[in-house]
Picture 1 (cartoon, rainbow, N blue to C red):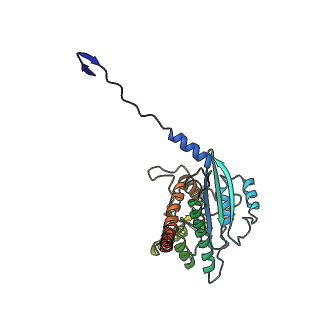
Picture 2: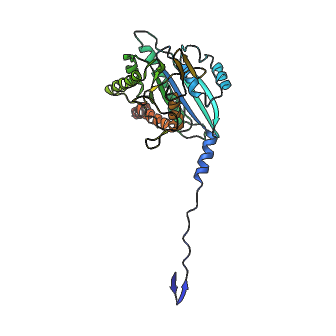
Picture 3: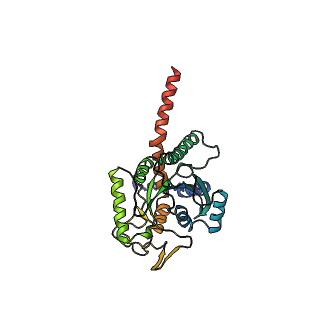
Length: 314
C-alpha cells in the first residue's frame, strides 16, 4: 500500500508465472515419435543367448508377435546364429511406440584365432556410427524426434561369459568393445554353479576387467540402497554386475534335485537385469551411447573433414 496526496492506494498485484505446459508438449512429442532401443548379444557359441533374449523380452512383446518377428528376420532366433542379423519388435507401452531391435551375433566357437569374428562385430558397430553421422548431417524433413528418441546406434551390448570359464578372448574382446558400446557382462547358464562358485566367479570377472581397465556400463538400480526390494531377497554375498542368468522357454529348468525358476531373483538375475536395463536405464544408456559415438567416431571424423577442407581450399 502506498500514500499519494493523502489518499491510500493499493499497489497492483504481482504478476504470477504462467505455465508453459512443457510437460504436456514434451509428452505429446515423445508419444508421436516414440523411442528405439538396440540390444546386441555377443559371446561364445552354445550359451543360450537366443533363448535368454526371448525370456528377456517376453513381458513386453506378445509371444505370437515375437515368433512372427523372428520368422520375418529369415533366421529363427531358436536356431544357432551363423551371422549378424537383426530382429525388430514394434510395440506400444504406456502409450509410447517402442522399437526394440535385437542384434544377434554369431558365437566365436572354439577357433584359436577369433580376430575376424571380433573385427566383424566392431565393424558392425562403427558402421552404425557412420550411418548416424550421415543422418545427423541431413535429417529427414518430417523428422519429429531428438537424439534420445530415434537413432540407429547400438545402445547396449550384453556380453555372455560361460559359467566357470573366463577366457582370454573374452577379456580381449570386451576391452575392444567398451570404447564403442555400453558393455554389460552376463554369466550364462549360471544354474550350473553353486552360490559360492557364482560369487567367486563374479569377483574374478570384475577383478580381471579392472586389471585391464575395461569399463562396464553401470545400470541404475530400481531399488535404491535405502529402499528394500519388494521381491525375494537375493542369495549370496555378491550382487550384479556381472548378471548371473539362466533361461528356459517355459520359464523353468527342471533337475532331479529341484526346479530353477528363471524369474525368481534368488535363482537367476534375469528379472533384475530386465528391470535395470529397461525400467530405469534405457535413456541413460542412449545418452551415454551418444557420448561414445562422439568420442570414438564423430569428433575424429569432423577433424579429418575439416583438415581435408582446408587442404583443398589452398
